[in-house]
Amino acid sequence: MSQLGEDIIAAWMQLIAAIGDRWVVSGLSFNEALVCNLLSRRREDGGCLTASELCAKTKILKSQMNAILRSLEEKEIITRTPSAFDRRVVEVRLREGGGPAYLASHTHTLRIVDQLIASMGEEKIRTLLPLLHEAADTLEALSAVSRHPLSEAAES
Image 1 (tube, rainbow, N blue to C red):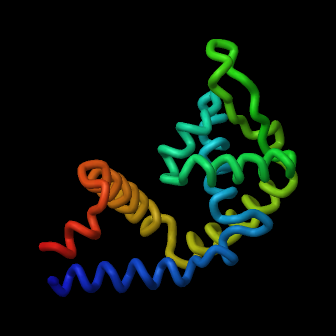
Image 2 (cartoon, one colour):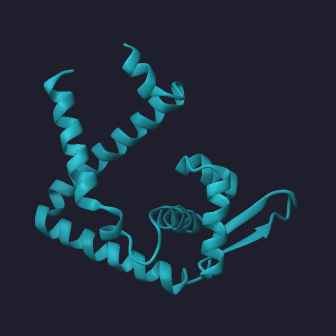
């Protein structure tokens, strides 16, 4: 493996350790916060997502997604309603206002992000964002080509 590869892994692991579930997400599980973020972004487009779409976007298994959605519904953060076009499809939406638990978690995360921006500076963050998105998109594309990229890499 190249030194660049080793450096990427080291930086990746350091970032994961620095973020940690408990540090960024407050009051919700990481997966609950992930689903809420996707629903929040989708709401800005005027729509909703189905459980299947959430599974595809998060790579969470359907059984796990159902448990997450049930928990978010019990916390009054989301609503699930049958589609007007196809009663077999359930539309998932973030409640208006997002529910107190999600708002508290999101506010906590925004404070951390504001501190990061203040420490690193807006210019560096604006440079970093497209690179992070490109890296995530590239990894998703590689994952779509091969369902088990790690096992294939180990074979090479």
